[in-house]
Length: 401
Image (cartoon, rainbow, N blue to C red; front, side, top):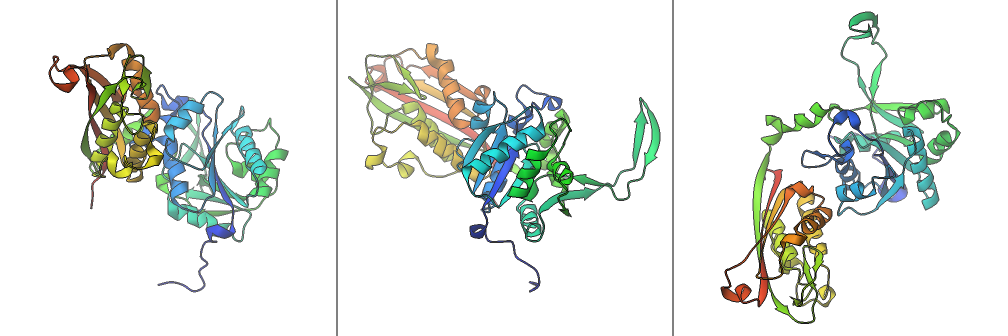
């Protein structure tokens, strides 16, 4: 039953909210080749979980992502298909990175509230976002916390030392929400030589009052290799199923056209004819991706009779299909492509094609196979009249209810 005295969250239209996600770390303790924020976690890059949580809440005007100087491409691949995102390069410390992000928000215009979140906490819920929004109605800052339930003690080497009284202690999580002008001023005034592991420390240094809201155990921070390994548990996997889609396409070879395959232009004396750029490989992959979620085919979404698709680059079709999968909570496991033609030779361009597909889908190159075969000079492809492509895509998604 609704309590008439209970206040509803402030409507989105009346408040300019920005999500500031800190993702500039190296994540070395988590292991792996990529920094942890760009590694796959439960079927998608760790960073993407938080961005989608903010965007799906419909409470935010945009997301600002703070990344390191050399992480532009990794971040773009992790967030393929997501809009209203701005990237900012961080500093030498977390505090400096947040300050850079806040400065970028200030330059962009009006911002009433900012929610500062660590990319390493993927379990962000709509319920917690709304609790923070409610708390900011009457407070300058709000932070989610959890009780300390374990016994605490100091250690001296390998031996247990003095016990610590846990009464009054709490575990602090993110996102930490603040009125923008107040926290921005606090960061600008903060002593850069003083360590600040979160923004509550910066706010406290500026004598900003911070109210507490109940945090969530699901919002735990991903830190160590076993945190990634835990997602392979039976409990997680039992709630998801594997689905497969297949795609096939063929286009004529003609004179005076460019030959595009997998988004790579191939030197050849003939090219493929079609309404778009006629990239037969990408068309087959698009149909395979759409087929995996029973979402029609390329012609349903990009009708060949519509003038706006004339000459269009086919990577837009693949990105569209990949995003349709992600919006249904799915993740792409792998793509297997076979190109069928007598000429040109595909082998010299195979790795470029795989990398191109990785860039447009957000997958690792190891999840993409590109093969080629002939029809022993039989049929239209055997006579050199066209090129065909066949693709298979597998995805993982929640089991339909």
